[in-house]
Amino acid sequence: MTDWIPALAGDGKPRYLAIADAIAADILAGTLAPGDRLPPQRRLAAALGIDFTTVSRAYAEAQRRGLIDSHVGRGTFVSAPAAAAAQPDESRAAEADLSMNMPPEPADPELLGRMRAGLDHVAANLVPLLRYQSPIGAEKDRAAASSWLSLRGMVPRLERIAVTPGAHATITAILTLLARPGDRMLCERITYPGLRNIAGRLGVELVGVEMDADGVLPDALDRAIRAHGPRALYLNPTLQNPTTVTIPVERRLELSEVVNRHGLPLIEDDAYGFIPPKAPAPLAVSAPELTWHIGGLAKCIGAGLRLAYTVAPSGREAHALAQALRATSVMPSPLNTALATQWIEDGTADSIRRFIRAESAARQQIAAEMLDGHRYCAADNAFNIWLSLPEGIGRADVIARMAGRPLGLMPADAFTVSGPVGDKLRVCLGGAIGRDALRDSLFFLANAMGPNAFMG
Picture 1 (cartoon, helix red, strand yellow):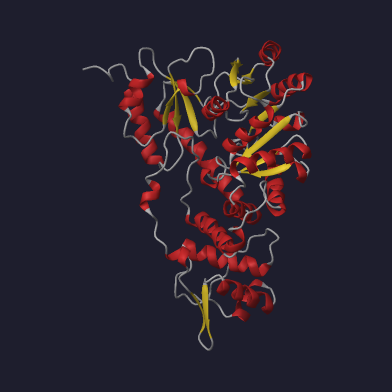
Picture 2 (picture 1 turned 120 degrees about the vertical axis):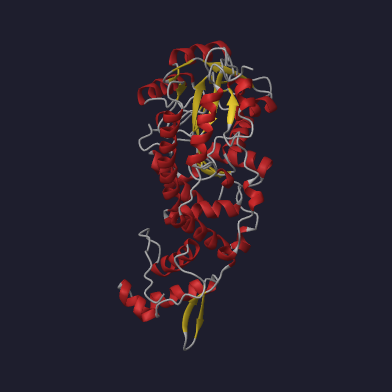
């Protein structure tokens, strides 16, 4: 394939590295196959309008990575790197937990190629990444976190940013700083079940605050603070899990005013904030001195990374968080952190985010089609719907009838902190399931809720 011309990312990376990355991406995407001959260096330099030395360095870098082999007098050929030759391990797919609210998974060869090219970069730095490192990430990784957080309109000082091992571990660490066993914490009346598990293990009592279609009510929050003397407030303000509610701008400002007036620390779990194209600014923008902002990567890139970009209210509190994390998890995985940083720097992370945004919207359309006539809450880019079951149809009955279907269902009991539970289900639309399988499963779910579903 001597006419191969790479598509170079315009991300400011040196050209020789961009060419090497393009070789890796095209190998993994199938554009370049083992044995293909690459263009002579001078010809490629002329085609790209760059100097010969740059192409020579690029080929040397690609050879160092094991992507190509050069033979004097014969030319340069694509080798078969281990990453490209490896076959998928089907047992890995079988381990997926359908009860989790997962983003749709990419299948586009070009995007997958770019993702795997990031792994090549990490592999080239494997040995140093196996060492103990900072409990809140290296400066390079926190700089990448700052760049990523800017997508949410945040520009915190680097000293306030911590790379942490996922939102769950981060919430746990923050709560150990803010509360003691027997203390109370406020949250949405219907909230993230992981918070319930964390609070239960730490002996912190959760108090649910009343909500409407726009989220937590400011007056109810004010009353709850006065009545219970809580140590903190937890909110999941964008595409809230499970209700899919996004708190609008005006309500966010009202809630921030209440928090600021009472001096109440806020844990803002912004797990889904990077997905909608025009999500409201985080509450951390209007209550920066009280807010622990957690920008998790699980929903906007992938849960397997187990990473979050956390902004503490101050540099001093970021240091305290570092010590808490050191005690419980030592450090975020340097391998995963390096991969996330590479993906952010080369634009792959944003491509994944945009794919998830588009695909989640497409799946919401499928849900609207297959569940027409049923009552549920939804949002364009949510990974789930919050389904109200017809009168007389119980949560347990529907879940039992759907057993074996590749559709994650969770009853309202898991999310309800206070007040009536109601016959509702969180129905997950993401994960490994494809569009056709999703359509079939939702069709089956609609039938399972029919008036004759449990007769005979």
